[in-house]
Amino acid sequence: MEHGSFRKAGRALDIEESAISRRIRDMEDELGASLFQRHAGGVRLTIAGERFLGPARKALRHIDTGASDVAAVGRSEEGHVRVGVFSSLASGFLFDLLRQFGRLHPNVRVDPIEGNPAEHVAAVRTLNLDVAFITGTKTWDDCETEHLWCERVFVVLPDDHPLAVKAEIGWPDLTAERFIVSDVAPGQEVHDFLVAHLSDLGSHPDIQSHQVGRDNMLSLVAVGRGITLTSEATIVAKFPRIAYRELKGEVLPFSMVWSTRNDNPACRRLLSMAREIGWRPQTPADAR
Image (cartoon, rainbow, N blue to C red; front, side):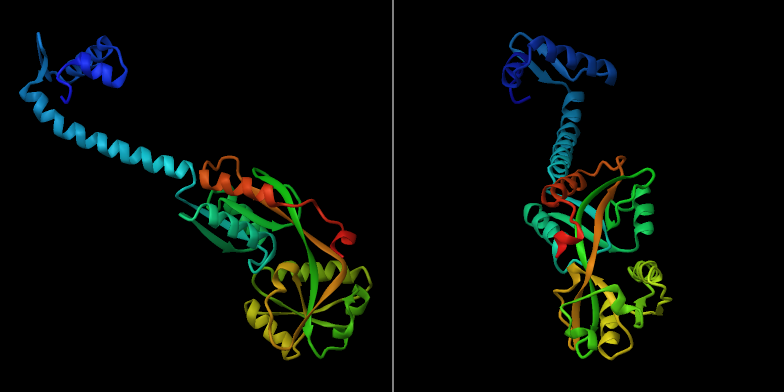
């Protein structure tokens, strides 16, 4: 009613007067009551129109707020992304990705969730995860997969271990060693990796599993309970009496896995950024 006539309202909204009049008439027909009294000088509200105006304005304010909120999510100014991780966040690709994404989208909540590849892929399929970053390059049913980066493999051993004097370690150096792994991710993958490579050398590796997390696993290494393997991203974390030595010729590929059914705008931004900062696949020679 700010303009007093359909002609002035149409001019303000850049809409034909006849279109406004027709839409008002259609609404009055649907409501079963006249909202405006027409007169030579313009229009004025009826009693029904006065009662309708307050709730209508309130509804429009809610629509405007909702539209602004949705637009903010679409621009990734706000939102929530659930990210399955299988590599360390201490350094490397995932550290760089999440730091850059956080700088550009500070109001988007990012939840990193640890787990093994099979668990992550199952969660991606059911949309309980938006994206997962896991080892390997295999394809998964009902998912998209893209290889993004590689990490070198390191042996973790006590700093007074005889192998600690070597700049890098080969598989033949490890055939007589006792290994320890965690019973949570990535313990099973480390176990399978050891068995696959040492079996090729005719060795049946001695591998013990412990119900501890990564920090306590490294403490067990430090006190001499065994040695273990880790990926490149973790070695920036320094622990007393621990040495990291590169395992010659071994590189782990990492991929991101997501579902095309996922319509989370913030996730799409994260996928695009991951592609931008991902680097070409490395060979063992490149990693050295």
